[in-house]
Structures are given as structure tokens and as C-alpha cells.
Amino acid sequence: MILVTGVNGQLGFDVVKELKRRKIECLGIGREELDITDKDVVFDYITGLMPECVIHCAAYTAVDRAEDEEELCAKVNVYGTENIAKACKEVNAKMIYISTDYVFDGQGDTPFEIEGNIKPLSVYGKSKYEGELKVKELLEKYFIVRASWVFGINGNNFVKTMLRLGAEKESLNVVCDQIGSPTYTADLAPLLCDMGMSEKYGVYHATNEGFCSWAEFAEEIIRMANLSCAIKHIPTSEYLTKAVRPFNSRLSKKSLIDSGYNLLPSWKDALGRYLVELK
Ligand SMILES: NC(=O)c1ccc[n+]([C@@H]2O[C@H](COP(=O)([O-])OP(=O)(O)OC[C@H]3O[C@@H](n4cnc5c(N)ncnc54)[C@H](OP(=O)(O)O)[C@@H]3O)[C@@H](O)[C@H]2O)c1
Image 1: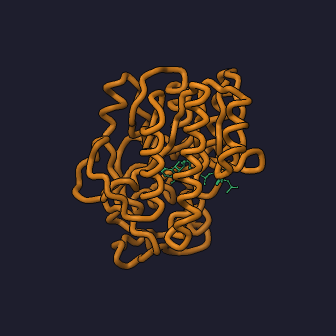
Image 2: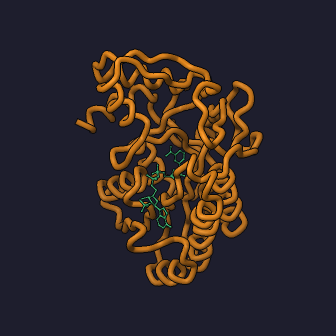
Image 3: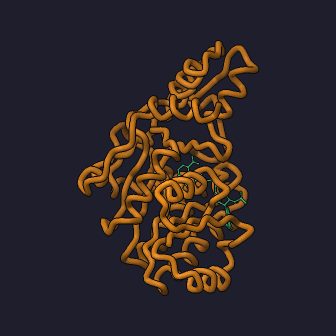
């Protein structure tokens, strides 16, 4: 039996959908069923359920708000993750923890290897990295999977924002100097399910293939949706946000390839399928 946290979020929703499609016994839970920050409740819940694997998709994901809510962000992403890991250890369950490109310092223009320059620039990135450390400290049977620029059917994301604004406005300013890879939850979910069925533990990067800037991503969204809004490329210095984001979010997939997992399809292919799913 596989337990999935964060079922009401983008990724958790699609992971449960994929497990059900494969007819794998699973349970998706949201905050109402289990607040992951409640240590004793988490322990009792998971030890009572005895899952073989926990795919931990719940997280505090408000990147800018986290700059003002450091304690709450850590409570969920560091200690909530620790609570889950401790319970997994008790019942000898595998754990899959989803992490992020924001653990890196964003310097350079080559893809980050797994052990690349880890230096989170934001409160959120730091909390996700500390979550990784908790998982590594406590468990042997773990997968840490770093994704980036996630979009899925169940929640808000950059694609939905561009579709909405692109239909309303004649032009939009979008940053062109942050480069990374979008990740479609419907493509990541099958990989996570494969991992849950395997024993090739370790740290992985998993995103759709290919790199782009946010501006290029926006242009493709507008083009595929047949909208006429112009995308103006602007530097990050003209679009300041509370949290600092990495310029370079390229992630190397070497560990995925070395372990024999399939790479995810290209981000353009993923975007095309996502737009169909949205209709
Ligand atoms: N979104 C991205 O661009 C991105 C990029 C890289 C990595 N990731 C990682 O990918 C994973 C999935 O992201 P996502 O986009 O699917 O996130 P999401 O849509 O924000 O979903 C996260 C879910 O976690 C739940 N949650 C928050 N605090 C909780 C708590 N104390 N107890 C139980 N549940 C709680 C939220 O519930 P509520 O709705 O009740 O708050 C929400 O449903 C996360 O680990 C995230 O850090 C995301």
C-alpha cells in the first residue's frame, strides 16, 4: 500500500491518479486527514497504516511568502518531513521526498549535478534542502527527487496564470534570464510510481526535457493557446520578488539515466498535452 501526502496539491493529485490507473493500492491524504506538522499524529497514523511506501508531496510552497513565514515554512518542509521520515523508519517503509531546483545557488550555465553547488537563495529553498537532510539522516530506503517549475491540473501555476493574463492583456513582461525546465505532474507521477516499486534508492533530478527561460515558456503557452498577447523579455532586475530565485535552474539527469529510468518527454510536448487536459 502506498500513502501519498498532499493529494489536494498539483503533484499529489496526479500521483494518486497514476497509482489508481495502475491498480496499485493507495491512499491519498490532504491536510484535513493528516497535518504533517503534528508529530504524534503522523507517527500514529503511519504506524497504524503500515504503508510500504510514502510518496511525500505535501509541502509549504509559497516561495515569496516564505520569506516572511520562515518558521511556518520550516515547520512544514523540515519538521513535517522529519515526522514522516521517522514514521517510515518505524514501519520500514520507503519514502519518496520531492525537492526542488531552489536548493542550488543558480550560478553558471551548465546543468547542476546531484551534488552540485548546494546553496539555497531563499527561505523556501533552504527549508526544502533541510528536508532532504532529514530524509538522508533517518532513512536508507529513500528517494529524493528534485523537480522544477511544476505545473499540473490541480492547482495554480505559471501556465494557468499566463493563459488568464494572456487572454486579458495585449502584452506581458516575463523574465528571460532565469533558465530551467518545466515539469508536468502527469509526467513526473509515473516516474515516482516506478521508483516506489523499485529499490534504486538515491537522489535524482526529474523534470521534462529541454531548457527555457520563463519568457520562452510564456511565449510557447501563448502560441499553443492561439492567444495574441506579446511577451516582452525583461531581466530579473526589472521584476523583483521577495524571494531570490536562481538564474540557472538547469538540472542534470545523469543519476536518472544511470539508474535506467526513462527521461521525461520534452517540456513542449508536455505543455501541449497539458493544454488538452485543461480543456
Ligand atoms: N510548484 C513548483 O513549482 C515546485 C517546484 C519544484 C519542487 N516542488 C515540490 O514539489 C512538491 C509538490 O508541489 P506542488 O506544486 O504539488 O505543491 P502544492 O500544489 O502547493 O501542494 C502542496 C500540498 O501540501 C499541502 N500541505 C501544506 N502544508 C501541509 C501540512 N501542514 N499538512 C498536510 N498537508 C500540507 C497543501 O495543502 P493546503 O492546500 O491545505 O495548503 C497542498 O495541498 C512539493 O514538495 C514542492 O516543494 C514544487
